[in-house]
Length: 457
Image 1 (tube, helix red, strand yellow):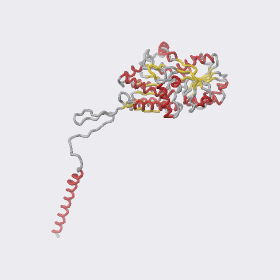
Image 2 (tube, rainbow, N blue to C red):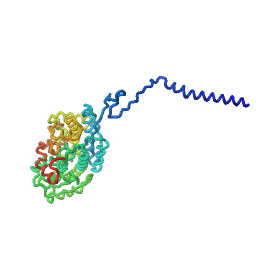
Image 3 (cartoon, rainbow, N blue to C red):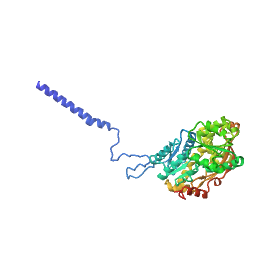
Image 4 (spheres, rainbow, N blue to C red):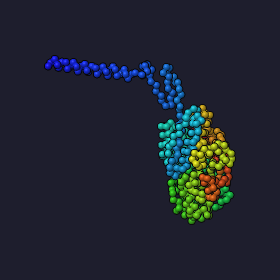
């Protein structure tokens, strides 16, 4: 019995040793079959935006594509959503084209979008995030001037560039102007000046009424239009302030009728303006009152409709037919590409957003650096041909000096003949930028009045 137990123990011991031999010796050997012989080399690790090191002398052996980030802050929805969409579409087109041509100084451009919601507080947070987390070298966009002003202030703190796209308030490059902010579109003063000649000639000593959005752009623009149309007497020429996002203007339009108004100036933009124009038309105001709109884009005109837009006076810095009428090759190409991509014509907001990435690219390449101060210097006083005739980034205030146009809404039947029903404008007058923009003497006086620095800083 004892002898049998000893034999059984020996049997289990031998079996255990065989199992251990199989797993510790044979299995690793089989797993190694067909694998390369071991070496002393360490595995390579590649980090995006860096260059892999040579395993021999730790020097770069292959260049990995790097990127430069630019930020776009514009509204996606809300009262200015359509304008924001135009900006985003055109900006994405520009970045695609720049990258297809090799990027900026060999770096591909990454466009990072943030929805401003037309809210200055949100726009401020967006700007901080774009500069700090996304490492954006430049931000552009903005429809609300209040948004643009606050974004510009963040840019100044971060010592980065902000380029205003559809922000018209004159103080952006006037009282509030500084070294880090530029504006591509026309401003309220340029709009008032180009339209004032026609208004004085045809509506001198008429009774004006202003319906104005209660924000930075609205207040500044009303004051400038009053100045250039000699309607500074606010008792004689009444006004009414509205909140951004208003959709019912019937009550105030009724008051306009009661006041024997002859010229109604709607200092509104985006969806608010669409509603006001539609309701003015539906109430019959246009039968005896001339309607004036400081700034217009075709997406807003489209929202109001051909009948509501007929005969309305306004201004613009660009419109889609201009390149074809004046033979501006870059403008023609842009309109055709945009139409092919989106089955419609681009607006002036789109044109501005399209040009800015190209202007930034060219400034970086002239400066041979992405550093902010050399790029600013490369922009200042630079003349360029974009989608129309010559423009210039004026050095003392960073306003893009350009030709501006006084326009009148075409008859509804003419608008409807266009395949997209977007041929809204009849040109009344064009004015060179040097004549329309604030002069150096006027700018000095404006800055002095608010104790701002005599030069941008």
